[in-house]
Image (cartoon, one colour):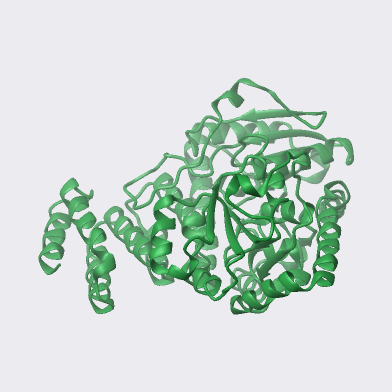
Length: 521
C-alpha cells in the first residue's frame, strides 16, 4: 500500500490541475482493497491523502476530499471541502456553486455529517457566492438589484420558484404544483411557476468522486402551462445550463419589470433565489423539517426551532421574527391497486416491516442492521421497497447471517400506497428524508416507527417516535402481540395523515401571515 500511495503522490504532483487516469487507477486499487485494511492502515491513508489534498490545487484538493468523504463519512472531510470551496480564488463562481450543491446532497444523505458547523458553512458559502454573483451582474451587466417598494409591486401576483420539476409522481413536484393550485384557487393570486433548473447541473463541474446530477424533463421547455388536478398553472422552464449569467440577468429583468407582491421558493438553498430576494421579498418553504438554508427575507418551518437550528440562526444573525411557523403538508396519490403478499414471497402470518427509500444502499447502515438482527422471530420479515441492490443484499446476509431469508428486496414500487397496504409497520432508519413515503404509510393505515430525527419524525410525530434505535425490537414486538395497541395506532395514523394533507388550510394561513409582514415593510 505504501508503494501505491507514493505513486499516487507522484501523479498528483505531476499534474496539479487535474486528476490523471493513472491517479484514478491507483485510487481504485486502494478502494478495492479497503475492506481488508486494518483501522490503523486506513488512518494512515486518510492522513497521507489529507496532506496531499492540502498541498495541491483547489480542484485536485476538492476531488481528494470528496474521495475521503466517500470512504468514511466524517464531518472533518466535508469541512475541509467546504473550506476550499469558500476560500478558493482560482475556481470560477460556477465551479464553486457546483461544489456547494454537491455538498448539499452529501449532507442530506448522511445525517452523521449534518453538524452545526457544516450547516453554518453551507449558509456562509451560499451568501458569499450570492454576493459575488450580484457584483458580476452589476459590473458586467449593469443590473441594479435594489428592493422594489411594496407600493410598486402587484399585490395579486406571485412567482413560485423551483429548482427541479419532474413527473407528477415526483413528490417535490407534487408539493410545488399543489401550492401553486392553492394560491390560485384559494388565495386568489395570479401565479407564475418558474423551474429555474439550477439544482445540480453539469455547469461548473470538475472532477469529483461520486458526482450527482439532477434529472431534467426536456419536454417541459415546450409548454407554457402545467395541469394539476383541474388547475392550469402558467409555467416557464429554463434550459439545463444553469447557472447561466445571461439567463439569470434576463429573469431578474423580467421580475423587475413586473414585480410580484412576493416570491415563494420551494426547497430553497440556491443562488438564484438569493438574487431575487434583493428585488422582492422571498419566502423559502423548505422540503424538510430543518430550517431552509437560504439567504431570503422569510423562511417557513413546520414547528419550533431545534437546538441545532437555533445555533445556526444565532451564528448567522437571522431575524427570528421572519421565521414563519407553518405545518408542512403533502400531496399524495390516493388511488392504489390490490396486492398480495404471496407475490413478494411473504406469508399471511408474517409481521411485515416496510423499509422505504430511494437511497437504501446508503441509508441502511450497520447501526440499523445490528438492531434488526436482534429480532429473533422468524415470522418477522423486513420488506425493502425502493433502491437496494442485489449486491448489497448478498453482502448483508454474509455479515448478518441471522437475517438471511428474512430480508425481502421488493424493489421500486410505482404504487407505493398499494404495496404498503400489505405491510404491518413502516420502520425508519436514521436519515433526513422519507417524509412523503411516511405520509403515504400513515394514509394507508400503516403505523410508523422512527427516531426523533428528520422528516419522518416531523411527519409521524411523538405518537410514533422511539427514544433510541435500540428500542425498535421491543416496539416491534408490542405491535406483534398487542392488538388493542395496534388498533389505536392505526387510528392515530389515519388522523395524522388527514392533517398532513390539508394544504389549502395550512398554506393559506402561511400566505396570509406573510402578507401581513410584507405589507408593513
